[in-house]
Image (spheres, rainbow, N blue to C red):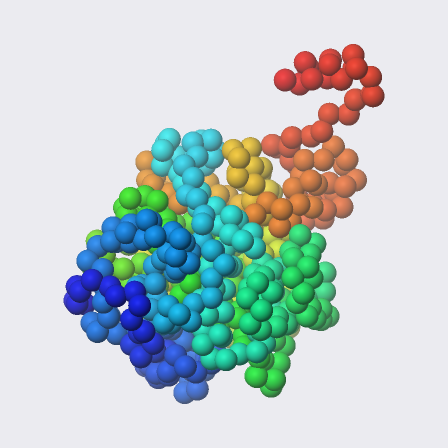
Length: 476
């Protein structure tokens, strides 16, 4: 068990954290002062690990409520850094924050009815309320802080949109470094691209998709010495852990039965698993929730590997031949990820192995949902007052599927993560609700969406007072 001394928030703790290879058979360690995205010894991903026995750790999670009365202090105002004692890799004076993490956990019985849950059992964690409009700010403040600690002058990412918006925002807000962003051709929504351009980032569009952009940005970052902030960066996931801390905080520190999250690059699910494992290890929670990861059917690598081909973490001994064989199939057949949920349109998730570990420690499950299921779920989320981008709705569609299968019980407490704001991708929303069949077919029909069961279409009416009155009376 760790020591139970009260935290000292102004104590530099950098020496009590280190980077470590996630593979138990390797376990190579590196200083947090180094900029790394993989292990030199075996090429695997890295974790940020803490010497909890030597760190001041709170006795209970309720201790963090003491931060609420200190919201005039930047670290306490941040929904990430008010949990600094649970991600103590950086001294407080090095932290770069823009007030991220002020996100609500919303109880919604309307969406619970849609899913098939009893009332007062479904919560939506609305990460779209972050400064850049998505959950990425939780991880970006942590990665950006580490970049600042190492003296970085430029930071780069590959992005389907949300990561680029977040990086660009932190760069222009702090004036500490320049942003370099790689995007694929035609694979970013204008809602997201407009943010990166407005915030002054150098945006490089290459011929290819996200996986191609990810490959190139890793090469460029290494060659030019640019700090890489994609979720292959272990510090990104430290910040994303705090989404779960805020969920627990909103539930009076009670652990829900299920966390349901969209699966793209698998950073969130990996971070959530690490968060709950650490809290359990520290004795701050008595049990862990189950995690459900939901792929879009058009970008379903995790589902295919986990459900159909039997890939497991296997206590740190995953069968990598299963992954290599599947990726070889993708290449030989020229298959690309293709989904309206652009934020999770990824074939080669960089956090695959960390995600497998999270699934093992939380007894998790993986599912895939169709474009139709996502957009119908998205419409239901919007009808209950919380507009979200299509990828976010994968969590609600997945919860509905798991409820229909009987995997999730009607009275279990479920938290679905809404990862991005509705205005991140307004084209899909407008197309779903439009009365123009040509526009519907252009945007959605080619993706297998045949109906808009929950459409709220504009009423066409002549510019005549009596006609307008009649239309309102007929449709009220």
